[in-house]
View 1 (spheres, helix red, strand yellow):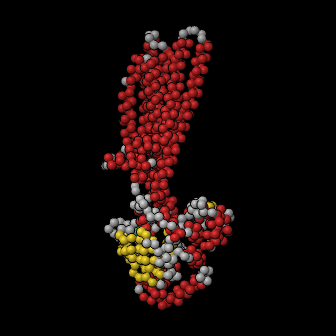
View 2 (cartoon, protein in one colour):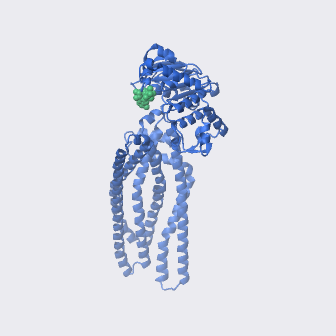
View 3 (cartoon, protein in one colour):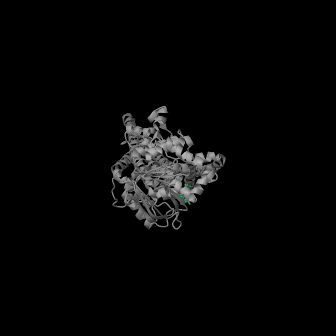
Length: 625
Ligand SMILES: Nc1ncnc2c1ncn2[C@@H]1O[C@H](COP(=O)(O)OP(=O)(O)OP(=O)(O)O)[C@@H](O)[C@H]1O
């Protein structure tokens, strides 16, 4: 794999400016690197091909012997005829057996190479930085993992198989024709330039048609993928009709490209059929005259005509595979284009090791500046120092930079200036895998996978026992909910956990956090979508989950963060106020303004209700009693 990528990168440097065209040399080098470990299999494939083709092409020759040496010689040699029939039958079986072996061996090697590339590609994509996903539509990534790897699949299924089998067949047929009759063979050679002209004309005509069909299919797949992931939005905004129209447009375009491709193919096949029939007529005429003049045996003419019939099939197959070869090459180019992308956030060669259990949870944002695009920062020289175990609420209007701040702490992006330290260690010094176990993130829309509740809570990590999962669910108050389900902890969730309410999904994501025991906990709008009853449940869960952990909570609902030890108020990428809830209210500044908006009126008019809620939620909390 490493070698394949290195080869690829070297080729890219020398091929600058030709990225859109299929780069056969680069693609071949890549595939050879992967094929190297299957070299024995490929050698066996070649051997099987040769045996299978020889067995197949010797059959007309046997018929020629039967005609000339037995039937026409007037020997009445029934035994000899039977022997020839038996050999013919034996050759057919041998041909079948070795064709089967050849296909199977090649398929096995090909499929395992493609499966490996697909796995590595997916693994590579999951390691890329968030900035890459910001810029790349998920539909195009799905195309790389599905259609492009499928094109590689076809390379092994069709192209290599055809090139080997049909290439050998052509050579064998030519040898046999010359062996049978040199003069007729020479006449047939005249055909070769004609075949080449038709093939080349067809190839250039077909190239565009084929590429167009593939591109339109990719667009269609990408469109469907993006629509599926945004289905709730489409339905909420009644966009079904508009989307269906867009789909129709893409679908029609793909349909037209397919029809064009099929027409071209049919035209090509029939042209070759015509050429084949003309050649046969030509040979029957020339060879027939020779037979009548007794300068050519009838059996030879028969075998010759059979070989000519067989000659056109491989020519057609090889020419048609040219397109598959091209699209596979383009697919290799695209796949390796993705492999080429290095994550912007990478581990240091010698990262600092840290014992997760020993992490205290102190966080220092040291005058950090960050922007998604260089030159337009969304966080400006921000400084924030958080004590171990402290609960910080982060508030601010939309676009203030709250989510960006926690994305930086999770190291989805790297700061452009300043540094972020955990227990005094710059997070860029830590291995990302370790940082992700230290910092646990609960998002507004927790993602659940298709699988059992147990597996969803432990994220398919078998080292976490069922008991640990159950204890975690009990801890956050999700146990009662799970036990009410038909199969309890074994209940299979559908993709994205769509069978559960937002609050239920959130409770399970809290259980997930408990199981993974991060030392720092981040909740991004974790209670934004919930009704007040579920929110209270979540608030209780939040209280137990945050116990003994440094916790950062982002919330639009101020009630979510009122119990925080400190509230940070952000505005346009800066901290403008900080303090406890009542201190901030007393300041009569930006927080108080936000609070007033949240309450929907004047502070004085709502203050009682707000404080009542706050005290109520504390009183209801089982931990604080
Ligand atoms: N992936 C992104 N690419 C480019 N710009 C982004 C990206 N994410 C956020 N921004 C921009 O960065 C700024 C801060 O956004 P951020 O999401 O951090 O704000 P926020 O306070 O969390 O807002 P909200 O409460 O609406 O989630 C905004 O101007 C936003 O448009």
